[in-house]
Every structure is written in C-alpha cells, then in structure tokens.
Image (tube, rainbow, N blue to C red; front, side, top):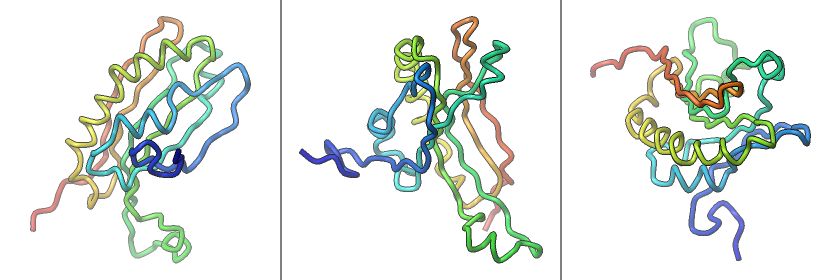
Length: 166
C-alpha cells in the first residue's frame, strides 16, 4: 500500500505548516480529505496546506474564528523590493488552504458541515478564480465558526488588481 504524494490514487496537497495544538483541540479536516475534495482543480499543483491553531482570545470571548480558508496571494514587486525578498520568493503567486483547530468535542459536527458545504464551495471558488494567478493582491474565501451559536458562515474578500488586457 502506498502512502506517498499519490496515496490511493489521489495527488496529495503538500502540508507547508502544521501547528501543535493542545489535546483539547483537533483539526476538523486532514490533507487526504481536502486533496480528494479538490482533485482536478486547475490550481492543484500549486496548492499548499497549513494547519493553524485558532486564536484563543476569540474563542474565550465567544467571537467567530476562522476554521477553513482558501487563499490566493501575490505581492507586487517594485523598485524598492529587496534582493532578500526576491530570494525568499515573496513575489511568487501562492495558493493556500488553511485549516484552523476547533474544540475536540465539536470536531465531528464541524467536519461534517465542512465536507458537505465548505469543500464543494472552495472547489467551485478555485475553478472560478483560476485566472487570478498572474495578478497581484489577495483573494480569499474564509469559513468562520460562531461557536456560541454553532454556525459556520462564509465570507469572500479581494484586493486583486484588475486584469490587464493584452
């Protein structure tokens, strides 16, 4: 049985970062589930995964916090851009899926809703925004969890520069 980047015939999206989380929390989605749901999107080879701990201060105050985000970003280089920034590839287009941790007791219910609603919406969003790659700015689709109301809501934002005509 193979468990490499093509485990079970699916191209696995690489994980760029995974934060350690306390035993009271869990990530509602894993790399395999996300990779399977996004199989065939135009950006698949460019996607990276990050797993982050949600900001504790939001949880403690009962405010919504990000639990899943799809993002495109590309900084624009200018005359004052440093060589160090160029070497760190700061101006390269990036497509990232970020998963936030949730309380372990809520993992299953959050996971089911993300699989049923959020991942299909991210898939459609990626397909609809496949032409963003040459543009500078940021584009994202974020799913927020309102723990006190047990609600997941989505929000989109964009600071992309307009497409240039050739």
